[in-house]
Structure formats: structure tokens, C-alpha cells
Image 1 (cartoon, rainbow, N blue to C red):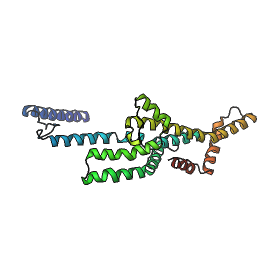
Image 2 (spheres, rainbow, N blue to C red):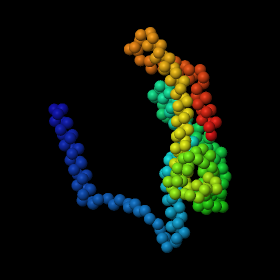
Image 3 (tube, one colour):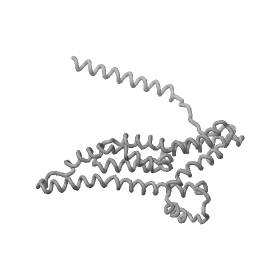
Length: 254
């Protein structure tokens, strides 16, 4: 009896569904609104130019993460912090979210004077309507290029200028194109970060060597040295106030 009621319920539901489908087919498909992308009043060149400026601004905003990473101190900071975690021997502590968050806030701290200058010279006048977007972009280039140029090695800069066939000697950093200065700045930051990472590895490497030699002299060849040296490396890092020293080295480097 229970099975018959269950089958009857399924039959009623199926009938209602078929009825709704038939009603929809008899009434026709619903008309959906169309989405159109275009410009109204295309006879006005000013409105078309304004729309193109907005499109260019949206494109620049979509590239903001790459600009933040490649033209600021973020590259050096995140590499040094990653080296620090690897030198201690920890794989997931601190987690990646903490490392990236710390790198972002240190980047904001280091770049604050540069961004304040950009705001005074470019953003505030642009929002007040005293300068155009082209002038605002030109005023933005100066402080950013000055920061990048101060931390770019001459060898890296000469490399990209030679490949780019730029023979004229620039008078200042503002005269160097972005496509030349940005890659030179990035590889300079990577070299500096790797040098700092090598220095960070030395004390922890000494601890590993001491622990490995001690275990070998005691005949404990089957005991992994990493298991014993890990607590000593963490203790050493805490006793010397390691995070303070690492962050201090990063900040003083800029």
C-alpha cells in the first residue's frame, strides 16, 4: 500500500511538470532583454574619447596587482621572507597568507612617501579637474621611476638599454622608458633578495652541521638530523628576535 501511494505521488508530480511544459510551449518562449555594448551619440567625438579614457582606466586597474608587485618593494620583501621560512626549515609556518600580508603592509610602509608624492602631484589635481588624465599619468611616472631607479643596479640598466638600442645617456630616471627600467629593477631586486637569503641561511646551516656532527659521533646514524636541529633553529631565531632583525634589514635596505 505504501509503495502504491509513492508511485501515485510520482505520477502526479510528473503530470504537473508535463502540464507546465505544455503551457510554456503554447504561450511561446519568454523574451529576454538584450545586452548591448556600444556608444550612443557617436557623432560626438568628445563622448567617444571620454569612453575610451574610461576603458583605458579600467584596463590599468586590472593590471594593478602586477604593477604593485613589479614596481614596488614587494618583490624583495616576499623573497626574503620566503628565504627566512625555508632557512628555519618550516614549510607551512608562518602560512602563505601571513607572509603575503606582512609583505603587503611592509610594501605600503616603504612606498608611503612615493605614493604621497603621487597623490599630491597627480591624483589630487586630477580629481579636482585642474589637469587631464594624460598629465596625471606623466606626473605619476616621476616619483615611481625615481624610486625604481635608486634601487636599480647600473649593470642591469645598461643591459636592457643595450638590448633596446638606447644609445643616448638619460639625464635622469624620468627619461628612461618604463619597459627598460621595470625589468632592470626587478632583476636588481631579485639579486639583492637572494644575497640577503644567503646571509640568512648561514647561521641555520651552522646549527644543522653541529647537530649532524653530534649525532654522527654518538652513532645515531638512523636519526634524521633535521628532527633534532629544528627546535634549536627555532629557539635561536626567537632568542635573537629574528623577525625584528629581518624586517629591520629589509626596511634599512630601502
